[in-house]
Length: 144
Ligand SMILES: [Zn+2]
Image (cartoon, rainbow, N blue to C red):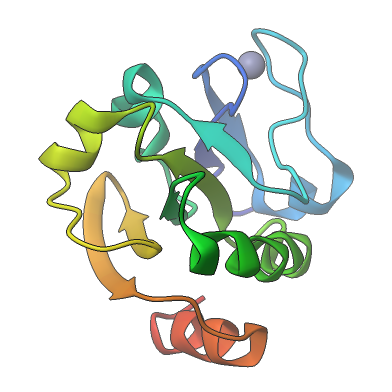
């Protein structure tokens, strides 16, 4: 038996302990009963940030804005990545307009920006939209 993984719930920020061998079984949150691991990106808000960057699964954040054309063209790629990486990496979208304080705190200068967090810390960052194979190979180089 492996150590359970700590994974924050995307719905209520509750921290769940989930055995690695159960990651594929669509585990439910102990607090809100929502699905902990999603096959699509969830929306990250300023108030959820501190809770969501924690845990044993990496979190990839796509910082975007409604007025940004490249962000919109990148959205389906990010969606596909979420489906492929379910159980390995959590994916979230941060609306930089709606969350200006957090965007400033993260030092966002251009969008789209991708930020990878692991165990509560930023470990990698990329700017610009790129195709799915390139996104997946960048994540592989980060051990995902
Ligand atoms: Zn929950």
